[in-house]
Length: 407
Image 1 (tube, rainbow, N blue to C red):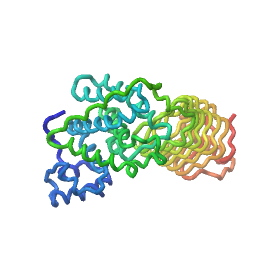
Image 2: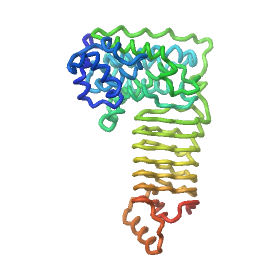
Image 3: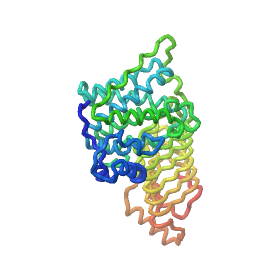
Image 4: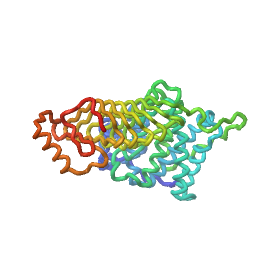
């Protein structure tokens, strides 16, 4: 870690970063008060703390810090130190449930080694991914929710297309789940697992103080790792993380999901704002798929039945070959659904405002418009709204909207 801290909380610098509405509404006014109206005055995090909302949520600090860290190596290293401290705090609770699972412990050590230059990115990436899988399995049986803290630390929330696939994007995945592991360390027992802010005020208080320390001129010593658990009552890795059904996956921003082993059915998958999810093989039915704002949804080849598909605002769903029935499809505003060759029945179609349903193999626009002209000659008057259309293997379905059967 660096011995000098180059991070500045000057309002002028933060303003130049085009931060989100949360910063403009909640953070900037407090910082302006702390600086007595001077936008170029520099101040430490501890100077700013008394002026920020009380009780302070760690997200108030993460929003500007994570954004500055995109271009500032020193801040990134300090943020990594803080995140690894969060992981160390969560580790003891995790290892009580899974005393033989060493993946998070190895990932914490590897992250420190990577930032110190002892191992390269390739080695670290594999170890951290194993650690992520362990944290994720801890959360999975209660369903999965992408938290506000997760979005705050995952800086790609602001500039996802520009940074996707970079090493910093890889880092942010590890950082995000470490923080969530600490703030939501009793996640599995929660009735409302997404309400981390309200449920864990002591943890948030510690996180705020610890982050402030990491952003001082002299970085603190990292927290020590807890002693490894005893092995006398060891259980298999993730033995408690087996479930055939998860009620809901709700995700915002580019994140990733946790899956229990043996998963076969999902109640609802909802993706918003560039969120992505890859459903594992073995899942055979999903009751509801709700996507919007450029989602990245990958469905397994084992999938056979989908209940409702609702895609809006550039929503996109590609059903894999093997899906035979879909109860209903609703598309709105430039959304697309691909139907596979295996499709046999769609219960209801509703397309509005330049939305499309087609099969993966049909890319011929001329073929589509020829189909439209044919229906026009036959006197079909039930057109979709705006430029919407539905096609399967080049055949247009404009008139019929219910009980479509495919041969």
